[in-house]
Length: 171
Image (cartoon, rainbow, N blue to C red):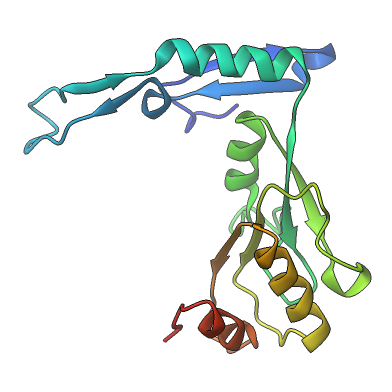
């Protein structure tokens, strides 16, 4: 945990507290909009704390750590920090792990397909061209109901044509 991980309940278990689940205020309730967040308390529209706590405890009981994958063979941002000035995706991966996900690298060029257990695949700032084979693997994952989060960089990578087929325009 870090100083940036505030306002949350954290459930931990296992040797060295290896299994963690986080419950944030957004998990506890649905809040109404306020005009002045510094001076107004948001109205609670729907209370969900009991379900959020129960779900977190159940995931810990069954040791469910859902895998999420980050692609790594197209010049993407690294999972590990390169230096103090370039933390890479360290903060994001720490948040995901605290929330009960298992972060794994994915090398599409060395895989026959996106792993079947992938909860979501992240592609963060790819800078190199994707091969047609890799694009087919990603498309097959999406056709099977897979989820993809992409943060495009300034370079064209071939993903643009794939996104166009799914109705997403990249400018």
